[in-house]
Length: 115
Image 1 (cartoon, rainbow, N blue to C red):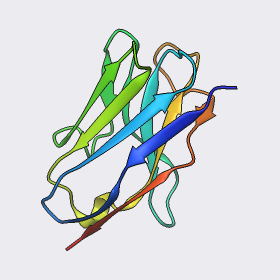
Image 2 (image 1 turned 90 degrees about the horizontal axis):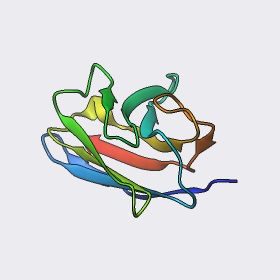
Image 3 (image 1 turned 30 degrees about the horizontal axis):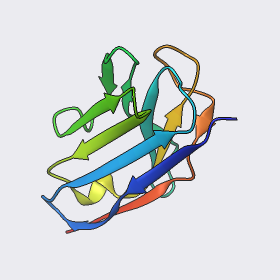
Image 4 (image 1 turned 45 degrees about the vertical axis):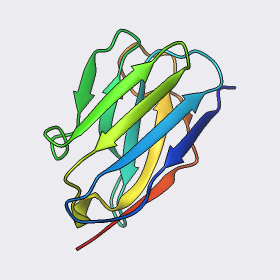
């Protein structure tokens, strides 16, 4: 069983930045971040393959970046120019698919952006 441990998140004013990190207990292929806003379905934020290929959700692709350190089994999501619409629980994801949603999930971390 792979465990994904998230850190970061919290509260920030609109226009600010936050960083989320996630470390996997074992090596996995694709890793990424998803979020679930209140009353909405979980949606893709960013995905990164072991080789560094990336994919972003349409609402974040010009503001967020994702990076990966394979040696540390770690990904980092840099979120810039945050807006209240980014308020959500953010979940780390990873697993065996090379570039798709994995089967393992973190517990989630809250990001709150105030106007």
